[in-house]
Amino acid sequence: ERSVIKYTGIVRAIYKEARREFNDPDLGVFRIPTDIFDYYKVPRVPASVHRDIPAEWVQMMIDQRAELKGRERLAVDAFLISFALMGINAADLYSCTRINGDVVEYNRQKTADRRDDQAQMRVRIEAAVSALIEPYRGANAAFSFCERYSSGSVFVAALNKGLKAWRERNGLSWFSFYSARHTWATLARSKRCGIDKSVVSECLCHVDDGSRVDDIYIRKDWERVWDANAKVLGLFDWHRVCHK
Image 1 (tube, helix red, strand yellow):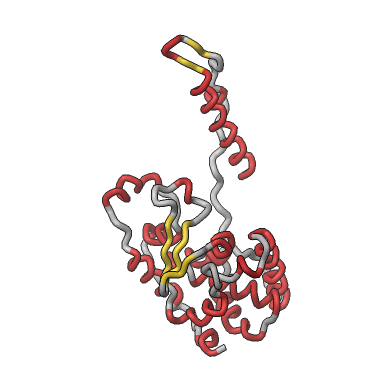
Image 2: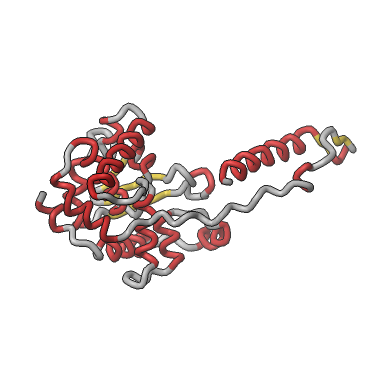
């Protein structure tokens, strides 16, 4: 379903650009007179499948990570880093270039070209997870993943294999690396945290056409975003991360 929506959307954009270029209403020139999309509507995007995992599984990762090795350890640690940084995705983990003090700074690739602020993100590294992140600090980048793997796709393949091994070790059902993002958002909106939906949207760096005008006048309060993350991370016992 999403492939149909994505590609027909691209075709529609190209078609409209062609009509702008080759038609000239002022001169009465209509080389492409008909807008075919007056007769065909691109399907609506279906509701996303919820891909969050139970909080207990996240705690299992925290508790077990020190016992893991190789690709399995890497995948579990990367998943936890993603979760600890409000669901940063694998592509941004790989390409992120800057950690300013205790703040990870990056532009979210997925929405950078659709936001006036280039999807700028600043995420404070909470003290509880600093020991988790420190071993993966890069020499010439924020994280060493880009130094360990030749490309983002190779990195993602390693994550998938490592997570598969961990799932099988614990007899758990399928979930993906992206579940870190879904799980963070779900817990943030849950009764245990009660974070406002608009704040969760800011934390996820979503595109919100309805708030673009407001964003011109309102400077983003990063402290509010960081406090939300601290609240979610506070649901877990990170003691083993600090000591192993």
